[in-house]
Each structure stands twice: as structure tokens, then as C-alpha cells.
Amino acid sequence: MNKRILPLNSDDLEQVKEIIIKEWGSDYVIVHGDIIHPAELPGFKIVDGDELVGLITCMIRGQECEVVTLNSFREGEGIGETLLKTVEDYALSQKCKTCMLVTTNDNLNALGFYQKRGFYISAVKPGAVDESRKVKFSIPLVAGNGIPIRDEITLIKQIA
Image (tube, rainbow, N blue to C red; front, side, top):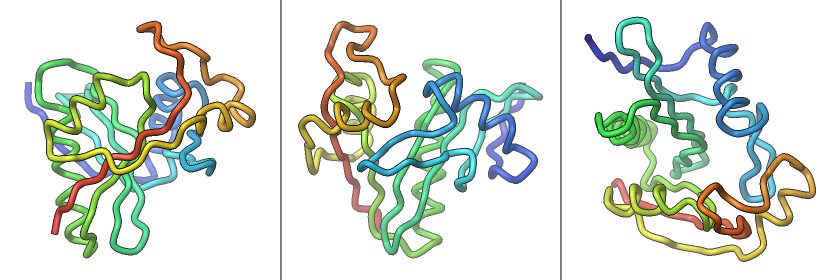
């Protein structure tokens, strides 16, 4: 098969929205207390033939690019890493100096993944997910790995 990296466009809106609902429990996420609709954000996808195998969304604020969602639908093929690098390149083209993202305390795989790629923990907001749960009731109390989901962890990477 032939993997291609493509920017998201308006034709992708419904498919991205469906994926966000499936993967994140609704068509929005809550980060920093803000409701964000990832399907409406810039981003990139990786397709293998006609199959979508990865998706990333981001937003630019000033000189900072925030990764909002990252989904790889095949483990061990470098899809997540490729998408992350693509967003870093996009951020540089938009004159950003940093990339950042927020994950939750239970997401041990994500914490390891991002730190291995040059991100570092810059902030921990205890109880932030408890606050988000007041708006988005579908956020589980406990992750599949048994860890209570409570805190937001911000990771950052200098890119320029």
C-alpha cells in the first residue's frame, strides 16, 4: 500500500466529526476549560490507499501551535510520529515557536510518546478534568487502565 499525508479540507468534515465522536465521546473536546470542535480545525490525515489510518488536528494561537487531537489507527507504523512531525512543520510555516498539547494523568502511553519526541511537562492542573466533566458528562471517572482521570498535563516543545 501507499501511505499519503494530506491536509484536512472541507470534504473531510463529516468523516473527522465521526472519528472524533467515536474516539473522544462527542464532537467536541474540552481543553483549558474551553469547548473545542476538532473537526473544524486545521489538521492532517494519513491514508493508506483509501483507508484513513491517522488523523491530527491543531490550532494556532500567536506563536504557539496546540495539538488538539491525535489518533493513529495502526500501532507501530510511525503514523503518530509522522503526523506530529507534519504539524510541527506546519507550525513552523505559521511562524510558531512552540508546539504544545494537553493530555490527562491516566494517559501513560501519550505521556511517554510525546516525551520521547522532545516534549516536556510544563504544567499540571490538578482537578481540571473534574471541572470539564461538569460540562461533558461522558468523560469517564476511571480510564481503562484503572487510573482515575482527574488532571490535565500540559506538554510543550520548542520548535524554533
